[in-house]
Amino acid sequence: MTELLAIGTQKGLFLATSNDDRQSWQVSSAHFAGQAVYSVAFDTRGPAPRVLAGVDSSHFGPSVAVSDDLGETWQEPDAAPLAFPADAGATVERVWQIVPAGADQPGVVYAGTQPSALWRSADGGQTYALVRGLWDHPHRPDWGAGFGGQAVHTILPHPADPQRILVAMSTGGVYRTGDGGETWAPANDGIKAYFLPDPWPEFGQCVHKVARDGGDSERYYAQNHHGVYRSTDGGETWQSIADTLPADFGFAMVAHPSTPGTIWNFPLTSDGERHPVDLMCRVFRSTDAGATWQPMERGLPQDRYYPVVLRDAMCADNATPAGVYFGTRAGDVFASRDEGENWSTVAAHLPDVLCVRAVQI
Image (cartoon, rainbow, N blue to C red; front, top):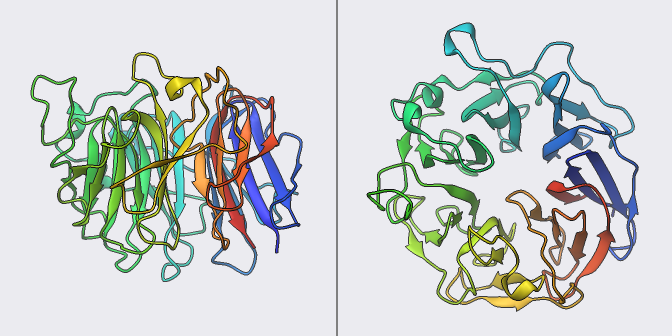
């Protein structure tokens, strides 16, 4: 078995491989050197795994590059694969998320962008059409911009019903569709927006990331701008699960791909300070759907560690036991081959890590 780890950074994409059950890693030189890579996806539905990368060139703008040979070669379209129609009056600024649909929808890939929009591809992620139902939503003029911009950064197609999709954005919050994207409704009941005059609005929350439980398709977990939540009814309502965390601010939220109730989080002190709690590099894991949390720190730096983990800079793979990975804004990348119990360093001194994705093939 081969483990593939994609590391998107501010100055290129690095691909790491392991052929010894994730004990050692070989890290490539930078693909798309000098270009920011905010999103990466592995599509394993075809005969060979496809790598998709959301590349942001300061000269040419954003694009999606595709590789069917694990990065040996890349295909980039001559025209922008994501482009708003003329009547939209907008320009794609960045591709924040790329997500293949389920096995029952071969070729379908979704993308989330800045400004907040959802896109659908029917050709494996090479060209995309705007999902007008979300773009034309009457709430859209009131969606604000988070510190990182106004973007759809979470896309979760339902594993059993291709008509159901959940998205999250900063700001705006969580929205759901049950008809394939024709209509959308906010799903933020219980998520607090402390920075607004009404802290419990219908929409306008600055949700940082949402993950779906690996064993219960109706259970979701959300990291908010202050606040960590769980929903047990498909996103209809949310309840706090932050009580035993050392802080409720952060960006990342990762769910185990197959074990119900197991999730990982990387808490930060506050939105004002934004560094690891107690300046210790620690991942917190829950095995009871957020009722309790335990620090996972063996092998991680514990002395005056300041770097932040961004929303897509943490992930889990599909191996047994699951591997967990994260990268920091200092360019450090860490891996655990035992679900967070022990950690090792994959790479150090890379550019600012924006996203990581891992898969075993």
